[in-house]
Image 1 (cartoon, one colour):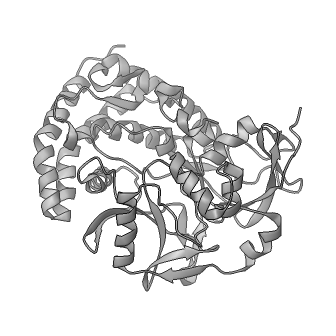
Image 2 (cartoon, helix red, strand yellow):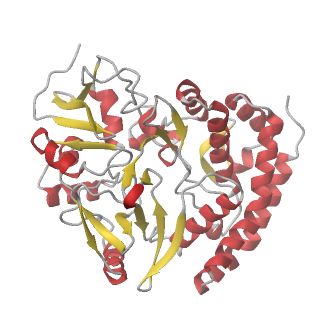
Image 3 (cartoon, helix red, strand yellow):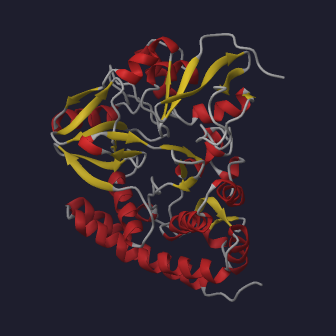
Length: 428
């Protein structure tokens, strides 16, 4: 039984084409594809393949919520500034022109404006960016500014800007943003620097991660993340590349991003990649790296919203996106290393509980050999301390020296403990 519409619709645009429509049903938003949209064309979500189905709110809402901030106060603030209600459909009616991925949402009467009118880029200085960072540190709900039509997912404070030949710019109207600026988590000292160093260390070890830089804007530190869902075309044109996180792909609401809260598991992610990805082995290797780099770095926040798939425009094919939001907890561990991971390894999340039996089970879940799993784990575990230290040395600030002073001994002891566990005889 379908859910009847009870309010104004939003058109859904993907790769510059209207692909369907969102309506307000009595139990929440519903979605249907345009009848002319090809069945083998890129889907809005792998959880909603092109068909004649009217997808109900229980399927649609996890995807829409994944487009928006998780912080309730951020959403209330956005709603006040945009003069709408704080529900997903209302927010996207005003902030849906530059979303994660290539999807755009618009009221029908504004479709031509969104598609035809060029966006506006307003140049900003380092001092302007520093002022925004100050506002976020003082008020972590102040993500957006008037005239901006972008939406970002997640919990951390952040804002999006466009990088041009002339420097940084705020994106107004339909103009796409290219970078995400984050001040870091305020309660953790130098957290933006720690995240950047973790990302750089992972890249050094051959993990496919988003490009980051650690930058001080008029003395205010921030991590700058290059958006991997934006591509540079000719004449500095910015193209959108569609993506969704694993919560969206598996139909989970953002509050269920952690496996312990009924969030996606490795087994479910493998199934999604196996069903939809053309290069299955490459994607499974990327998933293995996601699991292992969080283990090697003792990074506790490797949940399903921090892993995304890219949905390519040329065919109904997906690939694992570069990893993002990797941040080691080693600089902050004053005690032992009995920390829980967000995603279990062989059914165990606590690092001290991961032994030979867990590595064997992880290999079975990934459909690869246990030797391959252990070999890659040893590479990442053994290499992480030096790679993390090198990333901090590259930054070369007193803050970087301080973080390394906190971390060096802990990182090496963590690596030694993990390598000992990885040397245990196979359980099979």
